[in-house]
Length: 204
Image (cartoon, rainbow, N blue to C red; front, side, top):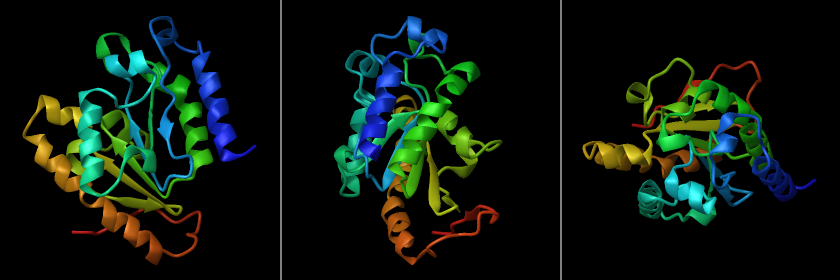
C-alpha cells in the first residue's frame, strides 16, 4: 500500500470512527489534508466550528493566520501536511479530553508513518505534549529538538494570537526559524543511533 493509499485508508476509518463520545456530536470528521510527501507536518489540537463544517483542518480564523505564516516563509498549505491530535470537534470548542486524545492516537501515528516528515511542528500545548511530555509551551516554544532523524518544533497555536494579540509577534518570529531548520536537514547525518537522546538545536 502506498503512502497515499494509507492516508486515504486512515481518512475512511476516521469517517466511521465511534471510539469516543465526540463521534456523537461531530458534523464532519477532520482527518487532515496536504502533501502526502511533505517535508513539514503541522499538528494542531482539535477541529473548531469551521473545520467541523468543512471537514478540513485550519479553515477558520486561526487557519487564515496559519496561511499568512506559511506565506511569510514562501510556503502554501499544499506544500505541507496539516492534521490534528483529535479528528472530531469537541463540543463548544472545549479542550480535548485524555480519552479522546488516546482514541485518536493511532490515527495520528499512522499518518506520521505514512508521510515520514522531516520536521513536525506542534501547534499548541496538546500537540506539544505528545512529543514533549512534561514541558510547558511558554518555556519551549520556538526551540527545536532532533530525535531519530526528525526535527520537532513546538509553537503556540495560531488561535492564541487571536485571543492574546501580544503573542502574534512571538509566533511570527518562531515561525521564521523554520527555513533554517529545513536547511539544517542537509547537514544532518544520514541516521542517528536509536538510543541517542534528543538533542536541542541551538539556532539563535
